Image (cartoon, rainbow, N blue to C red):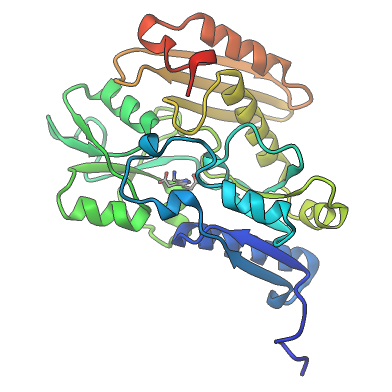
Length: 314
Ligand SMILES: NCc1[nH]cc(CCC(=O)O)c1CC(=O)O
């Protein structure tokens, strides 16, 4: 028997410590081991505490600063304490440190949101309290149901479900991908993404490494899913073009027929009372069309939205 305690892992994979992040790390490890015919011990999971997880008692907007979920992992990666890190792409800023590279995107999971506490958006009882800390979900819900009220609802998936059960809100919205990864299959109503568009990059898991680390880059290439990767790149390009981040009231959806990609996008005012939608088509070879699309949307902003998007965005 080989001595497990002294065998060096082939890859040290950094991850946040939340149950969802750990589930994503296990999935990544499984795919890596399957692709390379490795034993599980070849990939060492290294949990890293992120500032977003450490500071739990204040709204994210108040803590301020970006990179709440990535800063520590980026440092560990830059210092060589880990070889790669696993991310929920939805939480990853569009501008990444130059020395890092998103080398692989796993096959994308269901992009939909799930509504918990009502059978449909229409059937939410008048005047209900919607528990969410996501500006996109708040704006979308208020757009469809201006009679409702949003209450801030932070915390991981389990925390949010227990706050709902405790009556802190009447309904909440969660990502189908996150629920599925946590093994929570029967919860809530899946909202059709065509009608209720998700956040940019929702359902996508990305693995990042040092841009000059050829060994790790080629190991990760084996688990990259090209179509998912291209959709994520298009959505990141659109989000960056809009000057947005994961705190922006922006919904988008990518669909695909052969090489042709279609991006649909809706921008909201924070209170949901105003919205702008658009659609554009192109290929993944060059995202010039995505930049034009962003400019087109920004050119149509109403006064109530101008502070949220474009150059003045936070
Ligand atoms: N902001 C938290 C977050 N980041 C990614 C997911 C879900 C998984 C995914 O979208 O890949 C979630 C939870 C949620 O929105 O319900």
